[in-house]
Image (cartoon, rainbow, N blue to C red; front, side, top):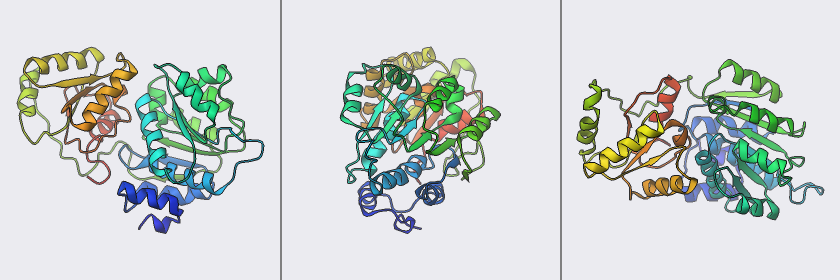
Length: 341
């Protein structure tokens, strides 16, 4: 199947061609036709499956084909709620890339930085807003965001919202949404509380499930090393001396652990940077940019900070400390072997 067979409009096909996209992933092939028809959707998909394009492309098409209502000259037409800053930025970048020929306006709002530039973008008028729950509620409380013109609502990574304690904030946002809207709901896992939330906000949804819950991507080669705790660092050093490790993402359980690994690697001449919740937004973005450009070969991350890291050509993911849940492990290793690689 090709993207043309999904009946996407020419401006989107042109953008996809520029991005080098040829064939839709399974979730894109299944979801796009239903979303284009205006149906509510419940998507169960693991990370790295092309989920963002599965909702971004049909949303962009619907907004392009349907003119704004006369009473909604500058109002927000689509809201995407995301659990982390990194993922919110990534989603916004995807809308910029896929929608480059549509003339639609997009913006992203998240906490940890000054709200000034975000408020200015909102004042200019936004078609598609991607937001983290806390900053969105702040801006709504200050009167900078109203949702009465909303046509489409996307809740992304709902299970991570629950894990991170944002579920009550999500419910507060949902309470402010217009009753008539299209809702798209995505979650890698479906614990009971997430299923209940989906049931309350979706109307006759189509369910799209592309892989079993908590299953790993076939194209990832996995190895395990049984090693005493004191020998972990020498083993890490040994692994990173392999020239095949061109771009490595290392996971620790804690922020303190991430900083410690960076210090230990620096001491033996391996430059690394850490990304976690205690770092400022600017420091996190700088570390991520250096990792993307190849200036930094090794990035050390905690799970929350890594949510939404979408960097091409990560050759190795190293679990310096194993996570407690299978879903987290699946998410971690899914940072490599992305988009068919």
